[in-house]
Image 1 (cartoon, one colour):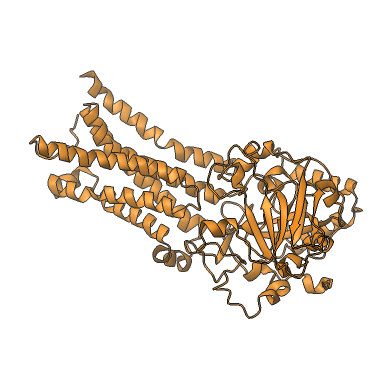
Image 2 (cartoon, rainbow over the protein chains, first blue to last red):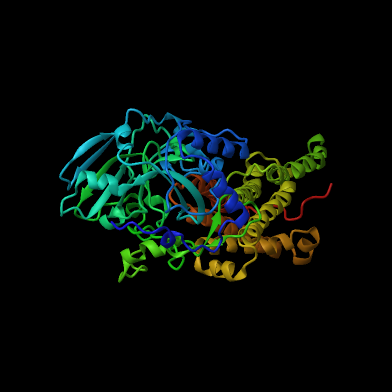
Length: 323
Length: 213
């Protein structure tokens, strides 16, 4: 996979952080060595800006920066950790923060199976060491019409795929989320558990697609999909499966949870696209979380603004049909 | 009768109590306590209260028959008007706070999105009811006509529940609760009509003009 140069991946964006804020932030970040201690200082600074306590694992991670990061100001940690769609812990947005405390993230293993030369079960702690951790500040657009900017910590999923060595038959990757009623007493029977999502192999190999272990410099809070999830920033949020226990390499397009529930509303691709409405609501604009009560909605961008990097994956495809 | 002399006082209490959800919202807004998505919070809260008051106003007739407490009728107008009040705040939140009065975004929604169509219909059906809620209107229209017009409230309530049902992504628990309550309230009327006809009494209409103290 070709690594893009920095100037190619500074995405054009209508609403770049004001210059002063931007430079202050860069100075602030640049002034620190990117060690665990610096990350902790960064987190402390963010905490000062948000007095409320949040459920957070409070374990610092060491990480580097990434040229794939967005330049927008990240959404407050408080908002990222209190406004979640994680139906295994309840369908209200504030329920995962309240109920995900019962999720046990250690011991944790991820099974890698299917069409691979090296099927294996990896312990979460060795999985985390597979590649150097990076901070990836990504835009996150939910299919419901809201968005955040999230400073994830992780590395490209391709590092894991390379390690597993998929066979020529592997055309899709499927992600299976943990499902355990003991740990998830609020799950109900809303969805067809366990939660399943999938990507085409080229989407999974794309350098923007990451395995996520942390947020704001620390390990992932449970409600955000601890201990490991994926994030695919040009797709609607539900494509990015949380708390992954199984990664399966398959020949046929895998069944995915929301697609099973309502195939006319949630397609396999689910690329962010302002032109293709959800059958029940418009996708033309989004409400920016943290922008305040009187803020206007922001126009949604094709591929969530990552078109320069990902549009070629879908050349010749009818995005209206392959929604 | 002491019970009926208490009613004006109780009315004041109910009037103030019905404003509390609004006070609570304003309080939370001032203290930035509306969560990560304050616009959504206000939208949901005003929608919930609109439905609650609308269904409460529909509960008056069955309750006064079951409890044989006819004075309850004097709360019906107030509860109905509060339903309209919160429904209007709900609509205003959607159009104003969420879409900043961008009519080019909002108007297509009204006919393109079935759930918006249903919600707007529910509100629109309440407009003539609110406008003719005065005693003067009742006299002007005449009891029979007024009552015929005000049967629109049934369709408004059905549209409101359908609106809620159609917008949820998957977990239909909450709209289902409203739907069951509405079903019971409408079912009572159908049953009462049926029983009334069989027992020979004419209809089951409630007095249209609230008796003045």
